[in-house]
Image 1 (tube, rainbow, N blue to C red):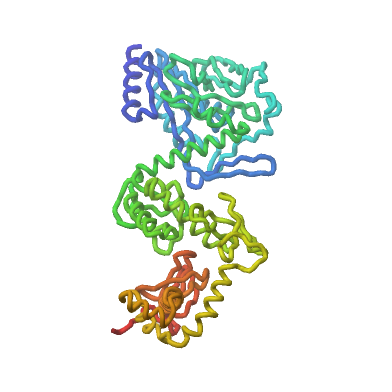
Image 2 (spheres, rainbow, N blue to C red; image 1 turned 60 degrees about the vertical axis):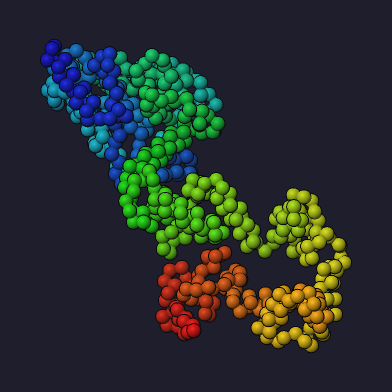
Amino acid sequence: MIADMVEQEDELLALHSIFGSEEFVRDESKSAGEIRVSVELPADFTVVLKEGETLRQYEISFLPPLLLTFELPEDYPSSSPPSFTLTCSWLTHTQLTALGAQLTDLYQATGGAVVLFSWVQFLKEDALRFLDIHTLLELPSDEQSTQYYSQDSLNAALSEPNNNQHTPKSEPSDNQSCNVSDPSTSDWTSTDLQGAVALDSCKANQKNSPFDHSKVQLDQSGQGAASLPIHPRESPQNEDQTLSGLSLTPSQTLLSQLLIYDAAQNRKAFATTVFDCGVCFMGWLGSVCVQLPECGHIFCQTCLAQFCKLQITEGNVQGVICPQADCTATPTPAQVKSLVGEELFSRYDRLLLQNTLDCMPDVTYCPRRSCGSAVIQEKSSTAAMCSVCGFAFCVTCRKTYHGADDCQGKQNTNKLTEKDSQQARIDLPQSQEGIQALLDDYARGSKQRQQLLESRYGRKILQVTVEECLSEDWMAFNSKNCPHCFCRIQKDGGCNMMMCSRCRQRFCWACLTRLPTKRAGTHFVDSPCSIYQYHPT
């Protein structure tokens, strides 16, 4: 007896040193505890749920752990195996019973040696293969449960006990009993203290208990499928409240729990892995990195934040994309907000909306300075009404709607053109340099000089026509239209491979040919266009 107690204490100390506090919890009041065993999944492991003709399947990397709760008898390990319960959310009662039988067989094979670590290794490495689960886990569908309970009667009671049982080969058989008053809180209990599998689950909110065990929900064949194991220091109430507002079937609830757990574990694994930033090429822990969901490229938060802040500050919201070359993936709005802060994100959100509206041909803006809201205009009419301030206006002249009459602004422009065009043609310089010189002379001259020029050319000609002429000439000489969205673009340096800041279309500045996203440089190989165009001074 003393030798057994020594071996028990040594085994518990060894488990405490091998496993962390998240995996192993010991009950100090007795030789008992619980171990959470995460099974090893192969690559491309898939969870499948069939609902009638609908097939839902997801690739996952992590499954919730099996919960092995044990208590060591006084004559363990020399004579008796541990008394234990085995709980899992994604295995049926039959599968858990088979695993429990195998655990008992492993103890029998040791010939009276300690066995807990061997049990953990078996559950971790060989449990799936033992159950003939390789790369596909099919969850039980809800249609199979109609013989036990339906969605309309979730509180129905099962009075007949389930006759599933498992007993060590050398011990007499003890039947397991199933007392279910509510499928959402049902408990599978075994009275076999000789090492039989016990699908036992205490109330998750039970007070003064060192361990909180997971609940067991009946699957459609009447077999037990436990929900996610809850850590002793956590309360399952929040999780229940999260799903309480959703109309989910038991199988859908189980699938959502598996996906939530897998996502949480993936985030945890990402945070503890070292990645090379695609900008600074330094290694960083995933906890200070950002991975773009569209392309999967990873950058440190500092580099990606500086890149996004620069683009937003300059107003190039279309440039808030993946910094990787030839990658057009965009970060999510939540990622942008966490990187640049509330103030810059508000500017990003506003400019992004503005840019989107500018690309829509049927969108105009309210002419009121105090409003300026976007207005959808109908192609068949020149009238529009702002939905924010209620102002009705003409989309042509931007003034109060005047019905079928001609626009007043257009009439004034025509009168000005007809009245003053003859005088403008007589004396206005014919070159851009001459017009620019005339405008400079008028702007910098004294009052007497300005009056002299106004008497010669006309005040409206100098203030309106000359400036418009210069602006149009400058734009025609210094800019070109994007071949895709026809936005005016100025080239102030660099090579002839251009990218429109509005529609992200690549094109050749020399011939305005649209270029593909990949291998765009091949256009300049066998063509008269040169990638660089030098202007000798």
